[in-house]
Amino acid sequence: GAVVSQHPSWVICKSGTSVKIECRSLDFQATTMFWYRQFPKQSLMLMATSNEGSKATYEQGVEKDKFLINHASLTLSTLTVTSAHPEDSSFYICSALPLGGAGSYYNEQFFGPGTRLTVL
Amino acid sequence: KQEVTQIPAALSVPEGENLVLNCSFTDSAIYNLQWFRQDPGKGLTSLLLIQSSQREQTSGRLNASLDKSSGRSTLYIAASQPGDSATYLCAVYSNSGYALNFGKGTSLLVTP
Image 1 (cartoon, each protein chain N blue to C red):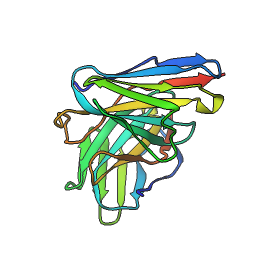
Image 2 (cartoon, each protein chain N blue to C red; image 1 turned 90 degrees about the horizontal axis):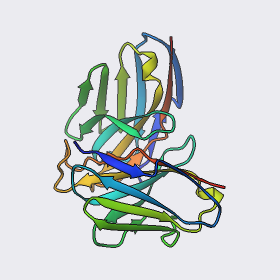
Image 3 (cartoon, rainbow over the protein chains, first blue to last red; image 1 turned 90 degrees about the vertical axis):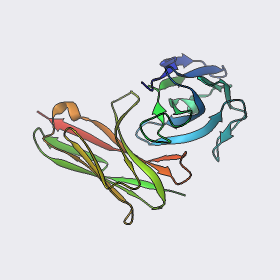
Image 4 (cartoon, rainbow over the protein chains, first blue to last red; image 1 turned 60 degrees about the horizontal axis):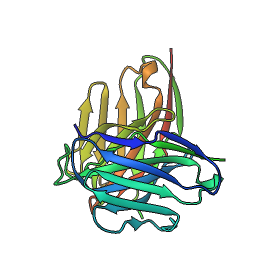
């Protein structure tokens, strides 16, 4: 149980285009999902917290107009990288917090497999 | 702001050795601490989660300990195998329960 999927697993796009990444909780509902970014040889950095039915909360330094987050249902959050540039190339990972703390431990997040974005 | 540090950054050991990975955090007011494994180009695999009230957790050849007062956790891997080669990440849940702060990881190579 507690499986999170991401789509696509990798994407290559031209500079200036927009890319949408989906994060789905497959066997549980999640009111809260998180988006992380990981540059090579670096740690995961939290970009934003996505709450179903409300606006996302962005971490300091993350441009909300560039990284659009939509959490339209209890099982789906999307991250859209608008007007992508080469410096946006990174590994994007989402995680989901089960509704009511249905994980093994209250507040345990379950992670998706990640999406590798390469902007040419 | 919580800062998580992992030492060493990289480690190479011959197969069969027991090894210890270290994680330290600056704010001891944590909720949980979790160890993950990440293979190159892949997502995260959860290894062990220790609640703040616990001192250790064990799973197979892995044992993780937590000392909140000193801001430290260790991951002990017994009888290492080449398949253990990966990056090991330590992550701390803040006292608010939701935010996760990650260390940069320890890159482990176990040679046959």
